[in-house]
Image (cartoon, rainbow, N blue to C red):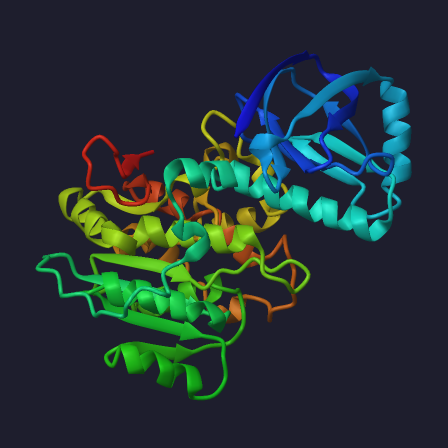
Length: 420
């Protein structure tokens, strides 16, 4: 359960003090008015200390206790003003050790001191996970509130029943790029139960015949292509776009086996983002809902998961472009397009439905998979990171509209598609 606390903090630096019952292991708190401002602090009395730098006022916070039985636990949190000079000095010292300088909001730092490097690293990782989940409204509290229990359980335990072909006039295709093959059982189940009437196209970076054979067991007519491991899910996509593979279709769903590994381990955010995207695009009636929207709205060019759209409303996109700006400029130079960085919007995770005609400007730029570097683990400033931020921009430049999707609901009052 979340609690709200009035804090009325002006810009400046603060030491965070807390008292909590022994069963409380962490506190997650956030600005009640801005989902970009949130963090998770670990409670290890006498070992951890936290200080917070604010660049914008913080009027009130919502906070949630992390505990085995949080409803039976109590905690108190307060913020005491500290010298800006002292904070900056401590931040410079902390910056010499990884993970001690963390984030709260755009340009705002959370300073963690004390304890061992390994414990601090675990705390920093938990903070990053929490910030992602809270930003996308996929944190624990939101999952429970929305009843989105599939976010943690998935769909692979549902029976594998081939969905009947839909009697639709829209020629549809589901395109899947598979690198992390361990996500295939879940994706296969979603396709079997929801993608009747659509062609299936799969690209994979795996070697050998095992995976293509596995795909054709469930989808005998699927088109499966093995492709170089370049550009992650973006390189294979633009290669197929260049080849005209999607040209025969009115609507194409682009998904991939997203995992978001951290230190080689699977993350909660990776699973929830993938499943939320699948719920918006395909699962539990979503595909039929989207197909109907493309049929009724000939100017609909791209539709993606609403909560994964960046930037959040009424905020600048620049913080999501700073590492990719050079790549973005090169893409626009290659397409001979004028652009305004401030107008860029995109769907995190790069899964969406699109109308091939709406990406004609990108198709004409003739990007090939050979334009991408061989996978080297780079997390920023790559062609794929630049391109993934531009698909809605190409759509709007072509005169089409962009829409956000929520998991399908048959009740009329719960709108599942919204033009952006």
